[in-house]
Length: 371
Image 1 (cartoon, rainbow, N blue to C red):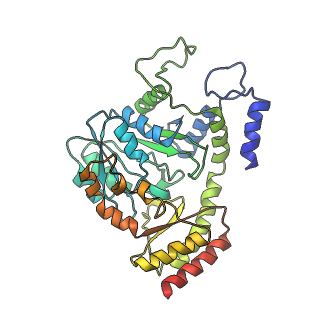
Image 2: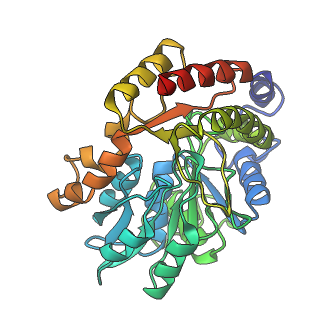
Image 3: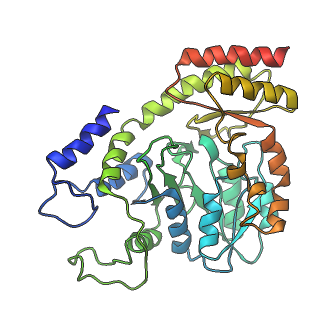
């Protein structure tokens, strides 16, 4: 809203108009990206936070920082945005698909079945605001000495056992694209308590620049990197957006709770782990009856709510449909998850809709199921 707009205007009118997150020290007043990182650390209680150009870039950098290389196997889940698999494949690693449980996230039982001697990382994805069963996943990962990288792109602000999602594993991935709970347009971040991972990521995302105490251009580098930097405009927007995060989650809950109270008796609702705090980004329920599903989806579209990923974008969020990049075996591993997801409907929780809009919707959905 106007708060972000005014913050950007100050950058141009009063702060020198510097868009790089580094350099031009005499012309600038602030280092907005670095301040954004500080605020992310404060919000999550992470020791380290690094802002980057996207959540996808953050996954790739984190995998490299954990030592994942070509030929290694990385396990992730069937319900997921394709970016996770793309990041794994981009470094030459092999994507291994794990099935989902009633959280619609990584199934710990199936996870253990997928582990081999080549497994070098596990990436559970906290889809649409809800945590995976992290205690069970971490127990398995610890037993086999495999690092966990949490994809928190769709659950920033969520918690598990009172700890911020992303800090239960070795590192966590955040996304701030325009479809996420807070946004910088594009952008992402890595959070971690591991200094080695942070140091690698900080250097790699900035062409390998190593020694920040020496003037840029005369500093050293000991590896090739790439450009995955965030801009100052994104950093400014991110700082303002962070101040709104708690309010967004509270308002999401009010709308989610309307649907939960009205529909929990008539529908099978997505399971939320008891020891987790969700961000209430979508209300997901399963409907076995194909005709009822069609009626519900039609109602959601006609009433201006639509759906979120399920079913409108399932081909981009279920590995069964990723034939262009996955081995046949991994497509086969996705069948049971695809069947469950195909019966699921995700109602987006949006602050553009009023609570009374969700109340009216809940009544209509209840009638469809009751007929």
